[in-house]
Image (cartoon, helix red, strand yellow):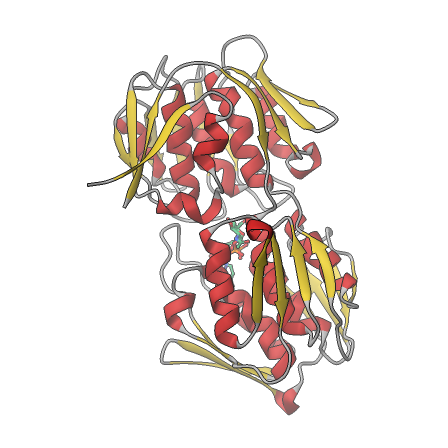
Length: 423
Ligand code: UD1
């Protein structure tokens, strides 16, 4: 198992290229199941989660070819396919559940393993399954698998009111509805940029979708979808993560491909914390305004609110802010696992339920720490880059799920960071 060793201190300067979005790519890939013709994605990120989705799609009978060092994925799924998504693959990644809607839409039946436990919370699938039932599917849970069957072999349009704006459920239902009979309306739909990206791709495949990016999405079912080529949207979470690097360490870094409208609420919080974000021709430039970081309060919310996927990294920034910050986690029930690790580095943090109170200290200090999930692990790396001394972050396989070339990207702006093989 690998670790990452970081020696803290030193301002950063230079540029970091931002990859295509992991979360967009993971929902765009299963869209290939909706057509007999090829779907090609460009600007795909090189990540282990993408390899897991590739493995899953291949197990269902899709041909997936990775080109240009993994940045182009050509997928093709013609003829008869397998409709059972096995536990052995699904358990590795919750986003595997995004094959349920497309399989059901294409074949009229599917068996998809429940993803199982996840470190950041229970994450049930009731919104997905209740919605598919409204579209005429019968769904039973047997042997750990969701067994789904569309009445008459074809889903039908429905008006669906989501109890919560779930990202994954919006994506699954949007895909399922493209080939359903009639019109589907999703009320209280998620509005994340990844949803708009999926809608753009599905429209390029011939789907009829309106209202993506708003809370009401309308999908008119069509008989068939055709092939398309689509460029994956910029990864706003990778972008926000690296925006925090110069904010925490000092210096100035340009994030290539960054856009403020992907992260408006996050940029507002950075501004309140004393961090300047400037638009450039190539992306965004980030630097501290005048030396110190100010405490700010943060509440995570569905888009366009502050993203839960940047909460851990923001906490790393606030550990050395002047004053006390309160972070409220409203999306996942157990997403403060980075707090005890940051405390090992000298941070002052108290967690009560979904609220963390962070009192800024002058400096964090290097320590051995452990990555617990994807975003938590990168928050520890950010904290380590500004800490005194050396930090060893173990269990970094979490990072490989969502950050391509993280060591090279951070070394490129002057961080003292290396990956080592544990003995
Ligand atoms: C997606 C992202 C993840 C991000 C999250 C919230 C991908 C691959 N992952 O996850 O990085 O942190 O959005 O922005 O895109 N819920 C239910 N029942 C359901 C579905 C969800 O109760 O049927 C709950 C979940 O337990 C969670 C909340 O709703 O507490 C948000 O989940 P959701 O928006 O569905 O997140 P994901 O799509 O899993």
